[in-house]
Length: 495
Ligand SMILES: Nc1ncnc2c1ncn2[C@@H]1O[C@H](COP(=O)(O)OP(=O)(O)O)[C@@H](O)[C@H]1O
Ligand SMILES: [Mg+2]
Image 1 (tube, rainbow, N blue to C red):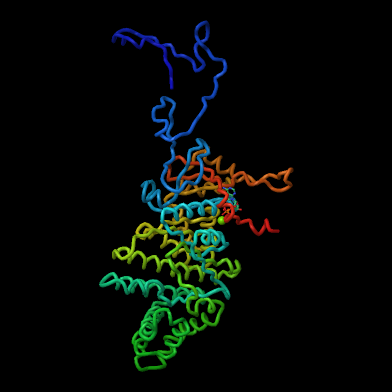
Image 2 (image 1 turned 90 degrees about the vertical axis):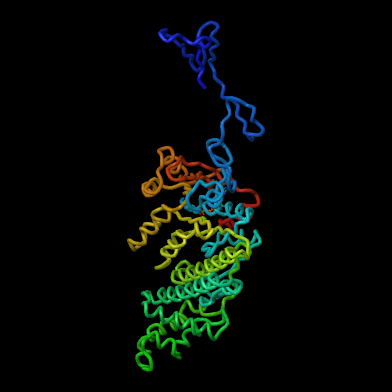
């Protein structure tokens, strides 16, 4: 506030020149001036507007919205910061779509931030879903929240890609168009999954004719089996048998030779899939069906990092299954048979997901485009923008960059200075913001008393950026209960 000494009582006449003496910040020097040689900082208190509504004039509102999961305190003002993509989108209208993108060096607390949001959102009735936990970062949390943990990997449970999953039961409760739409959606999903798995396994594309053959074969299987009963083994058997419906698709009619010529390649690929590395996971009946009744984590951390093909295949299958279940839940809600539910999907270690195989970029792309319509909030987590730009294929690189561009907001932990230009293609950063992010990436120092590394200075600190608006620097402080389930350095400590 500026103080000015002047003749306030009677306004000066229009032609009269007034001189207004400015009082310096420390008061007027000289006798009776009341100059203070030492200006004390005003004490600060924080209280709700209800408590301090009568106080004036030194009252300052916090710049951060109080809508969403409380994640920590603003580093400048110590105001509580509430933030999560679903509340900011649906309740506060602050962002254009319910998704967030998290960037930052490893070990700075990205997964911990998302776990905090998952806990808070769970309290709001939003179901956290982790379709493919690669580390595992979320297994303990989902267990503690009373959710389901499904393990997938070599010798660790199986997922039948021909199982329509929750869609079958849901379709039976629907009528007319809604039933038809859901059934067709489930059929399409299975077709896409089989085609994707075959493509991944043979490292080549599946042709349009082959897709038509798979679709026809799936139709034949549905006529003879209960949903979820038939597996890839039965699919291969149908191709071998060659019923009339399949022959019609291949234009082979009664000519056996032409039928074999058209289907042999596909049949060989499916048999290779069954007998190969992916068979034990995908060619058996589903061991634990995916259920969205409670928080869910599909733990795929048992798959070795070097086993990229299996990792990619399992991720694709998990997403197919998971999104099928969401589509079924939404169809029931649209028909008024179930309450409308929202989901919070976490894609952690995105760089590994994208690198795992062809087609995964497209999958994530499709998911990030759909999340608004599906009542699904999403968090994508990776280390740097360079992860997205390191893909071999130009089209994939463009799509991957789009994930960050389309995200409702970006949360940045510490990043090296050379990573910032790529970030600035997506969000504008001011110089102080740039300095802050770089300072958080400093390595930890050595604690001579404890004789071990001190925590990194940037741990738990994030800059939340919504487009070009000034960022909100926030520090996440874990609660005792969180720390008990949040220790991703567990294995190190146990040593
Ligand atoms: N805000 C925080 N305060 C204290 N420790 C934290 C905080 N955030 C994370 N940690 C700890 O730091 C380690 C790494 O966190 P994690 O969330 O896995 O990082 P990232 O996902 O960025 O690699 C974990 O042991 C976690 O318990
Ligand atoms: Mg992590």
